[in-house]
Image 1 (tube, one colour):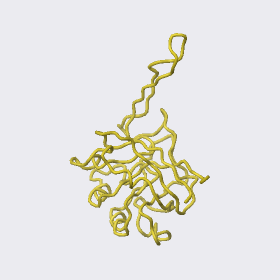
Image 2 (image 1 turned 30 degrees about the vertical axis):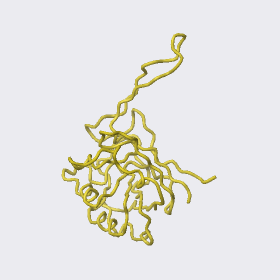
Image 3 (image 1 turned 120 degrees about the horizontal axis):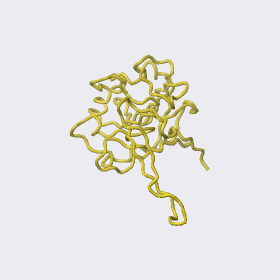
Length: 208
């Protein structure tokens, strides 16, 4: 059996969110008792909590919702590249040691230790030119362990706009602490949410 690695952070009431975004909450609408045979919960959360896939609708007012996005890009060969020494924006120089014979999907690790308990306002994103260059190399999906591919205080979302222009897909908030650089199979399917701007994913890597 092929080995798998779970790259999704745990989701609970302590999961960090962008300031002002909706945090995770869970309430019980039914509990096991002599009168009730089951536990049933109700959850409230932003679709950007934990590991998630952005839909074009998130950064394009005319973009499609996540339930309309083709799933093929979210499954297949990928490469994990470490860039813990990068500055605030990841450049091609930070990735150059692992760019030969790229698959269509890359995941970039920026943290030595993923921030499970607090939002990182100094998160690392991608330089827009990096995403343009990756698209030119045939990359169709980029993933990152930070909460955004743009700086946390960006109002223009320049890197998201490159994703829009080049019809790429993006995964954010992946937990890559325990993942070595190299090639894997990625499986990170979004839910079929027909009007949402993003979806949580249970992202895993599987050995090739």
